[in-house]
Length: 188
Ligand code: IMP
Picture (tube, rainbow, N blue to C red):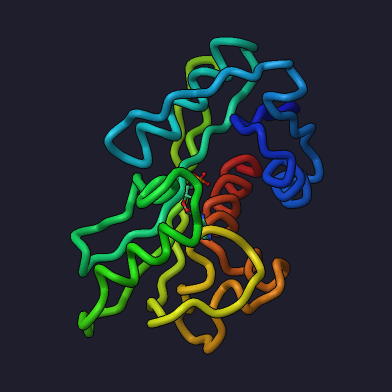
């Protein structure tokens, strides 16, 4: 069975292919679809659905959309769905600085990463959610990974995600947890 992932990112495609070796994983690139999908939903679920729906409408293949972000309860859930462009579009440094500034003097430093996956297929719409809980460090550390990894310390660890190898992070990440649920669903 084929699953089309709503991404232009070949790393994401490879990560999912490794977790689902029995499936043929394709991406937008394999269908020469280069449109920018406008994610203007007001929740992770809606954004994941927008992406999956676009792929399904274009190809008729089982399609998986995803949306992820960092949620900080002390900041009323920000950056949340605005994670990618909180301070500047995909400007990871500026985004981290903005979160650290807003967290100055705040003692409640809990946060979590979340991924929501939406699968759309003929007559089917399913959601899978993964989270990883942790705390926010006061200054960035490490140079692996991307996004907010340098300020996020997962629960029970001392290193930030950016201090860990990709392998270690991928074992416990929000994305891995959501994909595990997806895999369990496929095996049912
Ligand atoms: P996307 O939905 O996977 O594109 O993620 C949206 C944004 O959330 C990214 O641009 C990052 O700012 C943030 N984000 C998502 N996943 C991670 C992660 O694993 N580490 C750090 N930041 C992440």
